[in-house]
Amino acid sequence: MRTRVTLLALTIITSGFSRMARAQPVATADLDPRIVKLVQSVSEERLAAILKKLESFATRNTLSSQDKPDRSIGAARQWIFNELTSYSPKLQVSFDTYQVAKQGRITRDVEVRNVMALLAGKSPRRIYISGHYDTVARAGGQSTANASGPTFRDPDAPTPAPADPNAPLDNTAPGVNDDGSGTSIAMELARIFSQSGIEFDATLVFMCHVGEEQGLLGAKLHAEKAVKEKIRIDAVLNNDIVGNDKGGNGIIDGASIRVYSEGPEDSPSRELARFVQRWGSRYVPSHKIRLMARPDRFGRGGDHSGYNQFGFAAVGFRESRENFTRQHDVRDTFEGISTPYLAQNARVNAASAAALALAPPAPIVTSERGQPQIGRQPTGYDANLRWTASPGAVAYRIFWREAWGPDWQHDLVVGNVTQAILPNMQIDDYVFGVAAVDAQGHESLVSPYVSTPRPAAPVKTVQSGG
Image (cartoon, rainbow, N blue to C red; front, side, top):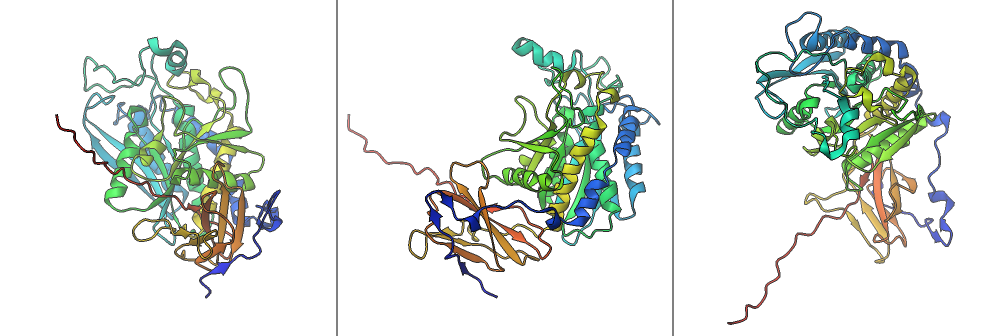
């Protein structure tokens, strides 16, 4: 096998790059028919049925009753568990349970349970599709908090202790959009992926988090456990408030979805967001994916941030036009949902997760010391890129963009090599990355070449006498 290729034909011309180096759109014939079928399998009717069932529990507050048969969080999580179990014997369904002490918005010690369904792949690396099933309703809801400005008491401040701290909080909090919508996507995709007959390279986890409204508790606890147990999580696609197409200001947008990701510009989460846009758009071209270069909306957060805090690549899906009167409010009911819009967002998730789960792992572009394997050899004016081979890859795609550009502008496929030299490509002027490609054309996340920060060295000064 050749380990290096020199791209002599790659030249810079005054009007830009040569045609061979321009990124070309993927034709429909190049799409994997199995992923196309997965995308087409998303059912509006099943999504609606899940939402109506979740609404029927009246509340799913983390601090609500755990022992009622048909109301509150205990009944809701057991129904989610049973429903996931019914989809396929291939799904490994379990409660991910923690004992949380009184703190912040948790007014008493409480047991919390994420509900997770694992679909084993050929490798242990994981890709998550998630939402949170817990709910909350406060006086005035999110719309009052937004409109009142800084004089309004922060609704996310610690909850005052009730007269009876051990009493369950069973006040009505239907939470159909926040976040029954994200939960329904995780559950529906668990069904269609587990029944697809596809053998994925990565292991897929369909996660219904708990405790999001009290500080991302379920996500943080699970991410912390993954670090301790050295579980490899390559990506988290988190969905939170993704079912409404009409904003509270009357503006309607049922044709796009926002995807938030934390920086810096070439962070793992930003590369995941770019992957979602690149591949989600190809399989669902009628739905625009709007990338947001910030961790989340101003002053608000979601479970993807819980994973970010522990070093995992995670992005947050948010509907394009929010109606704040249906968030943290008793008015967050099924009437505020557009099931066609919710289904489109589910399809983007399905396409992105399937494309990533079928692809090889991303190549490693750093040395054992963590340094990027990029240089100017052999002339001093070239881009010399090296990487570690990825299992299952038969080729690699090199990406680059101008150093001020937010997204990849150009790409070029090279063979089964672990080094490429791009003549006359000043590495100071461009950002480079490489992705692994398998025999069916499935492509990994891009691994960018990122400079490691230099530690600040103290400067010694001469102390004058005095």
